[in-house]
Length: 175
Image (cartoon, rainbow, N blue to C red; front, side, top):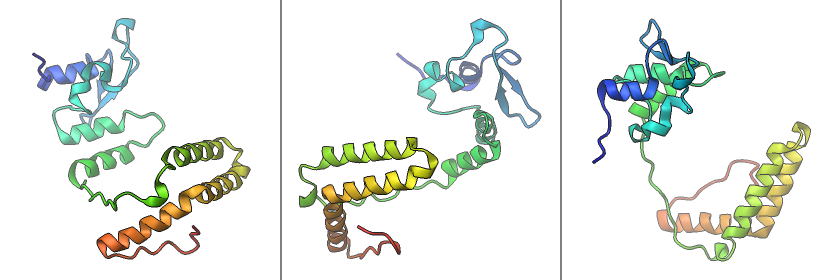
């Protein structure tokens, strides 16, 4: 029988021994450090390959979790991760999933449009910065012409029909 670790065991599995794999800051936050000896190298953040069942960082205290999480990403100001964690834990909400049923315009196009979308997004991301807009715009135009426009238009009409709400697209948004 598998039991999810708690308390000191849970903490130890995630961060290892103090001074070897982490240090404790004045705030109580845990900062992971390069392992002092090869036997203690952790191959993943919070030793996740051993602690998957913990599903996140668990230092035993929500504030400490946020402070410690904030130190876990190099090159990112910890305050952003601390705030993100606070919002996730306290202000998160589940948004209704709006469905409008099968769209006639979409039948037979799921794979084609998914592949087109993935292709043009990848090409846009790897394009030289001066060419991003041109590559993205050409890909979007092709996506719409291949059936994306009809799907969007049908989805908007169906949404209004099912939910009684008319969606106004942003100014300048062309479909």
